[in-house]
Image (cartoon, rainbow, N blue to C red; front, side, top):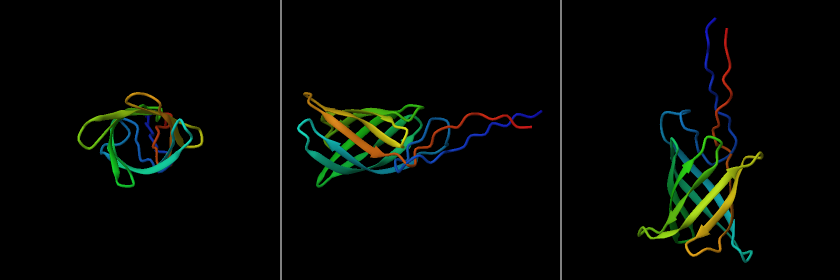
Length: 135
């Protein structure tokens, strides 16, 4: 009896994040992001970057403003990391978990506190499927 290791990639949302060990090359990541601050003010922007193993890198753009994103991707699709200004000054941190309906939902905290909630579609989040034994 031969064993076959079947790894499939399920399409779950537009954030092209990938789970370590599933793909051999960096994945381009593009998605729209929305956030709500502690006062209820809603904002939006676009994220574009790469997912390479457990490493997430990119830029969030909103209007004329840009923030650098550096983070990690857990095997369950959760993300966390830091936000910096283009000059390298720390802006804050973020984290999110992958929901059952294919969204990243989480929090951000600017330097000095008083953060808010953020979310993004995660349609293209590849997740590993269980191993299956072949004949």
